[in-house]
Image (tube, rainbow, N blue to C red; front, side):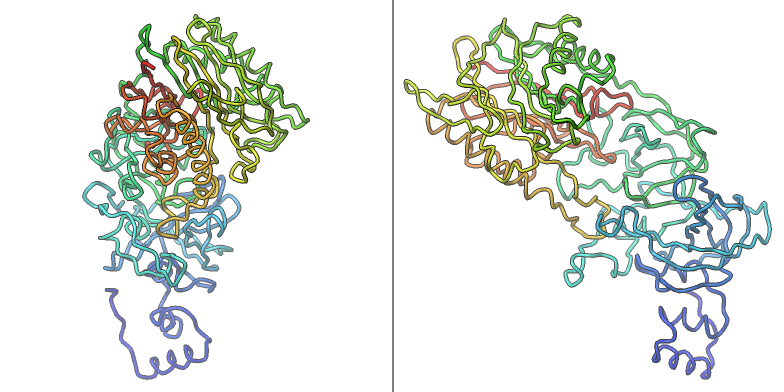
Length: 613
């Protein structure tokens, strides 16, 4: 507990009177400090919950040593009290928001007066936790060149194994009002260090350097390790407590941020203030940044299909349109040929219209697809043909004006497409029985496009293919995004995943359509694939598989290999291929060529399934 101060009966009476009349707010300690003229300390401001007991109050002459200065973005500085209390739940550091470039330097001893507040990065609707700060500050530099408070070590021994406490049901699941238990929960541990000078030692990179000059490491090298060096997100309860985002304090013009891939090591000591931001939560903003030691990770190559195997792939090509550099087309094409071994059928997601994000009513993607298939041929691949259904302008979500859609590419030398009264954006394809076999009424056609589940979202594209005399139905999907979901570091625990509602309805619609095909022919070869935007253990995946209609083929892989995307240091499944019961034997490959690398042609890894119909 904090050390106590002598209390006279007169002071106690004054405090009681002030609290009773509402003249003072906050903890009794803080109120007594005001009456007794004891200085407010940083740990008094931080308190033992996520919300400062002095929020909304003016404080005067709060002392600390400057541990970091940020001259860009949210400009200000961090300061820390070198004389810590003995309560692990109270942080000794705080951010001082100056709004303009700070005039202090690291090592300055300062006195700060200002307004205590709780700033929520991303706004209250984001569900993010708040950062305790002092704003509108008056700053006095007392001395310079002081030694910094010793950095608190964050490592596998200090971070608890349990991620977060359960939110208070009486507070809509919020953890704001709960007393911090830093020895029990990782989120409480990080919160109790908010604003403090912290350090990590050599740590493995689990999220590659991104365009915003940040990367992710884990301080727990053994935690849910992926085969290639990442950290697997394998359930809603395996949030991976050792993950930590790394940024740097130095402006990029002054010091370039290191380029790292998953599996690399950030070696030596990385030290600086612990911040919280809207794009990942707790972040070590490095004053001293370790050195990246490159690993040996290389993009994967899948094996080619045998003559009697049909290879079907899915690839999200991230808003491809003719205004993209030729290099992007060439790199994506090279990946199809060299890394995916030229699959017989490729379901593409995020093919944009012929002028990309220009919002002028254009919906055709002929130029996009002509340019892409020509690049594949130039890379040594087959002369793919394509089939798609153009969306209605601005009705399928994604980048406004871009009109993303799913597209089938197929190699006519290996597989044929069965054309059946091709549908338009509003026409639903159906299932009929022909000579004892299932068939589509429209091929290519869209599944149930009028269903509210597909409002402002991509409608599934269904097509009929024939390989060595056998019919194969392929359904290309791009389910609703996770936009609007709260992050794992949310103030609500468990976090609110509002986007799941729509994907659940979408999965039920696709599952119902597959069941129609199987009702017409229980031995129908059906493949549903694409960017499902949800995990293999999610309610979405369960709804797709309902009744045994489909099997998420990625579950055939060892857990350490189940991922297609890396988000905030968590390797996770978003892209999937699912098979009907007739497809009993197959080989599956999540081909890791993008998600783990700083240099990406897309943010998704393609998936390939090979089987004999």
